[in-house]
Length: 115
Image (cartoon, rainbow, N blue to C red; front, side):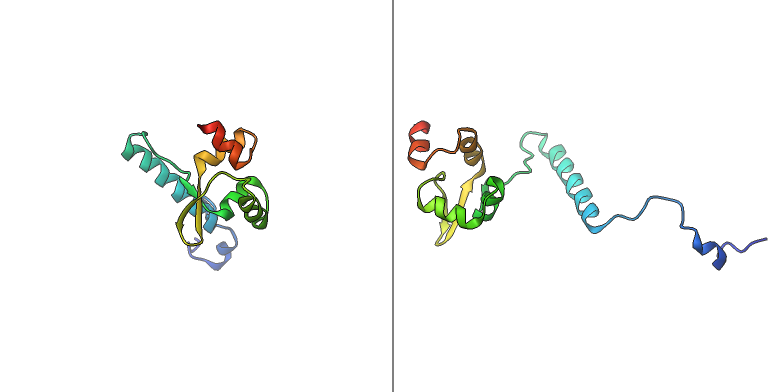
């Protein structure tokens, strides 16, 4: 008769799912929260995208360096930003996506198209 807690049996891993990594756990929680939010709101406005993005997020979206964002902003080659406070600029994500779909026109041309 063998002892269920025998050291000899310790070499075989216990049956069951593998433990989650921290990233997998965070993704699982985020997915469950998003589903729960959709249930609570009745699927009417369960957004996962932010409404406003900062320069770093804009550079990631466009696939360019942050310095390129700053140059294009100064040259009037990005959609108009919102200044939340001094030096704190944000862009409306929906507008940025529409601007990209329009071919990334200059600010002047973009605003003329939107009128």
